[in-house]
Image (cartoon, helix red, strand yellow):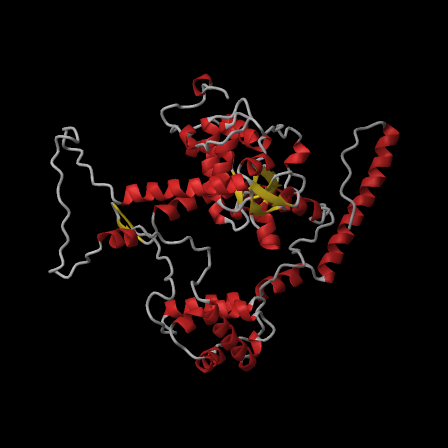
Length: 483
């Protein structure tokens, strides 16, 4: 196995020594070939069996790395396996997401180092692909037709499954039935039983030593042989617990991991809630046809408050629901939360989460209704969308101007000879005085006399032009033709 100091990207001080945690098993009788074929690293084609517990995955990784099956795997590989084992608790199938950037920040490594050690785990048969990451925006798939640019972008993550190679099961003395990912453990051999007993005894001794270990005073610099041991005392007069070991054991109990959306109800209580939800469906028309389990989950604040199904049905009957909701349980949960937060519905405190109030920040001009997060969001919107909107508005204005210029009707200007004095366009509204003036100026008699005078002047011009043309004299410009 390659030494840690030979890897320049590994910080030896930041990586703890986990080589001592490897199992002491004879690996000389076992041979293993690295899984270098990418087709054999998929969940459907892998030769390793499924693992669902992070502790088993970490033990398998310590065995495979400690046995030296991979020449480049080392402590950093085990650190990465530890991170993957912690993420396995989020899935009941032992699947975990993989993000190179987040993992690199968590371990203090480069992205290339994370990719390399992930490849080492794949070649050791410890992880297999469930889904390959792509650049496809999952936010579009989640929101569908309602997706907008404000939802942002999020690529499809890579999903890995924790698996155990067959060589580890053989070294641990396990009997496996089946092949590949769906194989399962059906028993142990004699050697495996001895290893299991030895491991259980060692774990029991470690727990016992940690339980009865005396607290160490770091301020005392003397050796243990110089420090005077203090006798143990138990106070039975004050009513305290005599059994201090039981008290320490109760303090060590940690809260079990609860999945997202879990209520913590027992099976009997869940069945009773589903039965009440069915009765509510029979008495409420817009809840019929929905899933009784989902409806019971949406009505859980009422059940926690001690309401009966009759009271719940009467409360739902007061709601004005014109149409059947698309998802009844989601509508019921959101409506209960809205009514409780607006003061229409009264339930005990702690059952409904209040709406998040807007942040208030005080500045030089006093308190503002919005905080820095709102201001940052508005600044991001302004920098992202306003320039594009301004360019679009300018383009639309240019298009309107061009269209108006091309669609405007062309009017032939009237010549001074053909324009009637005092004439106005037809689409202009005239007053009474302007109408009388226009009638006087455009009277048929007056216009006829003017036209007759122009015709006589034109005839005289033609006669004079003929005479001068015959005598080669100067010819003045012709008078305008009559209308």
